[in-house]
Image (cartoon, rainbow, N blue to C red; front, side, top):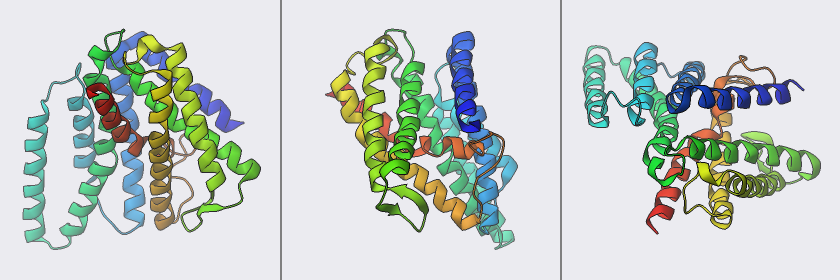
Length: 276
């Protein structure tokens, strides 16, 4: 019950933010989720023995998200790359001063690559597909990708709990089954198709019901793999959830787990479709 109420509340926040504040509100919401998820990921890394420069990585993660967007593009991506290079140089100098900083540099790079480095693709969806959508922005497309990823979870849970027998990755996530994978992919295709059917004006012109269903299959696989990757980090850290800020779900990273790998997969699949 808590999970259902939290899910309804979260989707209300998403649609309410976009409705009242438009693209800027959506990007800020993405940055907030990324910040919270990255903060929790720091905790998992540190429990696993990998330290992080917390303040730097949190600030730089937000900069990555905002710089990737169009409407909040105050920092061009080349400048972000320059800042990243400077940070690596600083890290190398820190290692020269104290070899133990190699551990901290490795954790910081992993933190930036795994959370904001993947979540920024939602900002890129908003920015790079704006001209392909009737509404003139890609917020609807980003929400569509998020919906496909999250409903892959829903389909996997419903089918897996009902008829799941064959374990998918018992050493990482004992509850996941191959039957659940099939159910998750079927749900992903259904939600992707329904999204195009009922909200075509929010999505790219060339995204039809048929190719939406086909694109949903690799996106669904990415969502499942992304979920498993977070489960592996949690198992290594010895925790059940990354946090407890969302009743019935856990932490912000638990909320974002299936979104991480889905974003770049969706982005490049849609680029291929746009160029075909």
